[in-house]
Length: 118
Image (cartoon, rainbow, N blue to C red; front, side, top):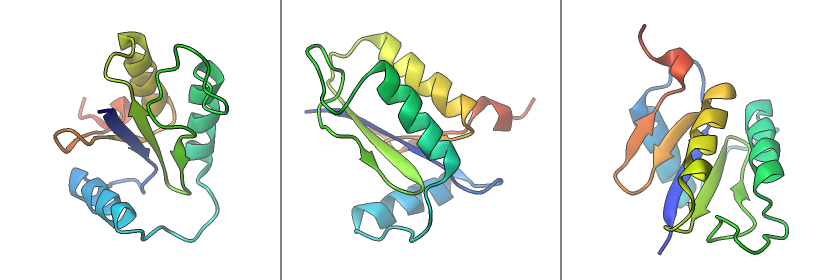
């Protein structure tokens, strides 16, 4: 069993409900037809620069490779025993690239730190 997260590049003002709706559309095979969002591309390059998925080497945190990358999101299926640092890096990079983080285990959505009320 894996620990599943995804990061989403939605418009400014997107709510947790918007993220959950996008996740549902993805699970139903409905993907946006557009060029990849630069934030998603930058996140993917950064996270796979630290933790390669093509190929995933020994000790890889990824339970599923390659990572599912779409125009507006990246899905991250992690081994449940992956190091905490991997999760911290995912959270940090999601914030750095203004991406919403979806936790598939309980449906929680975490906005980037910049979007949190001050």
